[in-house]
Image (cartoon, rainbow, N blue to C red; front, side, top):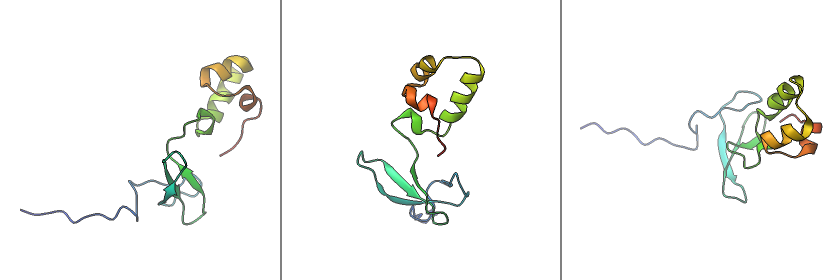
Length: 94
C-alpha cells in the first residue's frame, strides 16, 4: 500500500490566487466572525473568500453597472442585490 505524503496547507491553500497580482496567497489569521483571512505575499493585500455583506463581493460593481444600463432604479437595485442605496450611488473598487 502506497501512502500519499501529507501536504502543507500553509504554502498554497487550494490554489487560491490574489485578484490583484495573481500570486498564490497564504492564510493570515481569522476575522472577528471566525472566517479565514488570506494575504498575498507579493502585494500584501488581505481578503476573505466568502463575505457576509453582498456589497463586498467582487461582482457587485458589475451588477450595479449592468442594472443601471438596463434602466433600473437605485432603490430597486438595492433591493435586488440586498445592499444599501448609498452603495448603489457610489460603487467602489476592491
